[in-house]
Image (cartoon, rainbow, N blue to C red; front, side, top):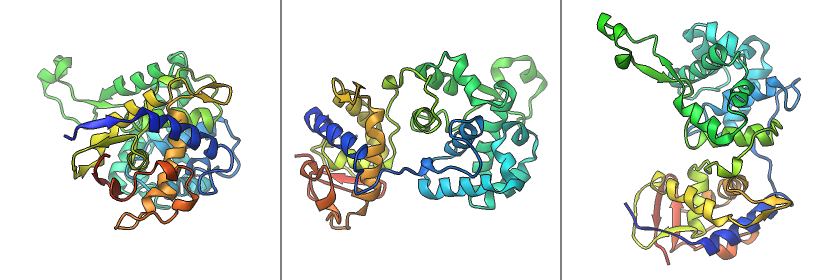
Length: 320
């Protein structure tokens, strides 16, 4: 485990630059995120939109986001399989059909795993929340921390698990399965709440400033390349090692900053970081040369090829 340092000065400077760039001219000329896509015939902020966003983001793990959201739109636009976004119908449809229909437009990349996640999430909303994610939010008084805790805590007995007679008598031995696999995770949970507020206009959600940043490989890559999180050791391992420190870093770095007419929160920097890496840092050559450095709004903060060379999901970096 590397000895990790947080450079709050660099983080504060980066947060201010990236936030204002993303919300004005964009980063590398753009700021249109994959989840902004809208299916035909649904109104922004409607229950249908909430379900479209909720079900889609529930399988957002190790995926190309743009391809995933395009597949979700194509699936929704196909009336024959639009039922996939209706928790009540998903809960009643056989697993084999869910697997087949999610494969039609490559909504699933891992057909069995993705279908199991999808059906589990849909069934949980159908059975406990009347098929409407908003009911879950209301039950937590719209509090972000409470919502994230509920996502982690809610579970059900795995109906595929064969119990012995003794196990039926002893609740402690029953196999439990999460109601919200992946949606309950440290990345997807906060990401879902941000999307509900920003994309679906669910303005009642409170306490997002206390939500951890939904770190993925792009957020991690951009953070490390700017030296906000760094180590003086040579480290070659999975980038997830840095995720907890990256969340901690951005909580600290945005403290006291302003985002227009309100205090800035870590989630405000999430989209700019993702966009910066997706369209910039991720395009470095194998030698570490940035192909778009001249257009980068934080080029003066980049540690450069010798200090932070981040490729794929492995990191090889040396702090200053």
